[in-house]
Image (cartoon, rainbow, N blue to C red; front, side, top):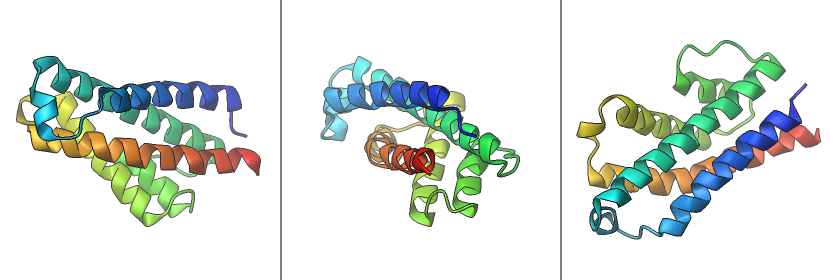
Length: 139
């Protein structure tokens, strides 16, 4: 059974990160580079939102006994394989995991254009994941 309290906390954390990303209102790559803090803020907020999304996926996987992911990306594959999310969302979330991994392990290689794309993708994809998880709570 899904732990609604844990899920609510995760969703709250994700919503806070995404809300702050939206508030920063990056409309172009140039917006990220106007002030060095913009790029770092965007990276940390996106990183945090993706991490909590992985936690959310893990909660579903564990509760529903969907398998044992070996990587962060596999969390979303298991959700796709078990029809919790569709193929498009699985691909979007897998991209975000790749971006998250670049931030975590090779930040120096993460270019402004890639960061801008990842920020926009996280604002679009992660709420879709939350919507699908909330559907499971209503069943």
